[in-house]
Structures are given as structure tokens and as C-alpha cells.
Image (tube, rainbow, N blue to C red; front, side, top):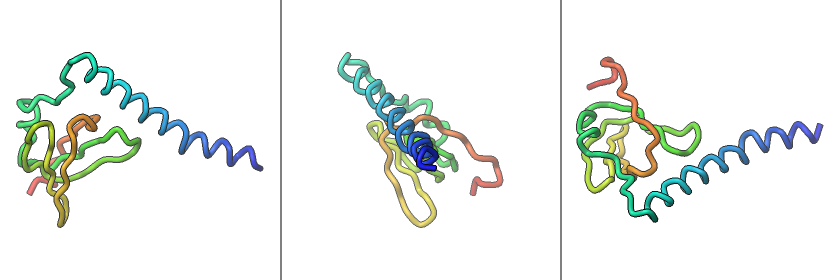
Length: 103
């Protein structure tokens, strides 16, 4: 029975932590080399004013809201009743939601 707990611990805590650390090492590697890892604003301007699902490097975590503005690699997102600011370096993917979610 205790071995089941160990497997669950590894699957849900250890592996996601290792993945996040690998992503952060990659981002820091590019910064040390002098390369800019910023998301291009031209690409993000397509999503301005639209409701999107933004996946972050945290496993299984995403933010759903309308992209309001872009400034210096920071993205301002309007969620239900709140506003969130996300660093562009932490974004894994952006998905445009269907027309029924666009208001």
C-alpha cells in the first residue's frame, strides 16, 4: 500500500516540478547568451481584444480571459471581475477560444 503513495507522489509532484525547472533553465540559458526570449508583439497583436486560453509553464494551469494590452513582454488579461498581468516568458501557448466566447 505505501508503494502506491510513492507512485502518486512522483507522478503529481516530482515530475511536474522537474518539467518546470527544465523550462526555467532553458529561459535562463537564452537570457545569459544575450538572446531575447520575448514573445513578438506583432504575433500577439492578433489576439488583442479577444478571449483566449493562455497556457503557462505550470503543468495543467492556464488563464482564460480577454487580452487587453501588451507592454514590454507583459500581457494584461481581463478575467471575470479581475485583471491579471502575466510575464511573456512564462507563456507556453495561446489558444483563441471559439466565437461563442467572444463578447
